[in-house]
Length: 151
Image 1: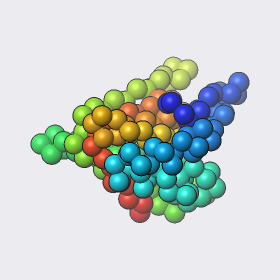
Image 2: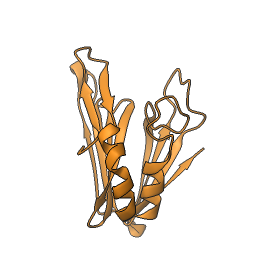
Image 3: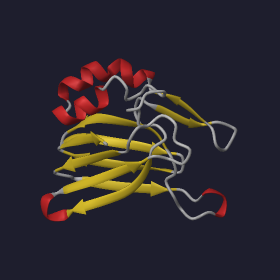
Image 4: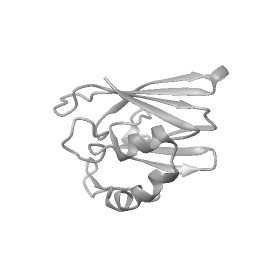
């Protein structure tokens, strides 16, 4: 990610998460982001770790590819022992140009993404890019725009 910091701590289950650099440039980025991406990234609860609409700690539960429409839908569900989210999140990407998933194999386990840590939406010549960092991997989508729905 370019502005958001997601850095592992010495503890294998801890991360230093810092969206402040991104939040400082987000007002300028929002002007050039597609409308759905700008609304999603700039939502006041998006980076508030205690808020119900913060993406932190969700898990990717389903990815649906609709090739003939150039659309991808990602569904995020609540993690076990969830205490802050009221519902899951669905993000639908239109006119997808690129979709990449990278996973890591922690200590002999099967590859997985784990819990969502933070994300970053940036302008891109195709519209926008959305990078999502998890405890054990990442997802990167380049598309014309996105539509995010909670619930």
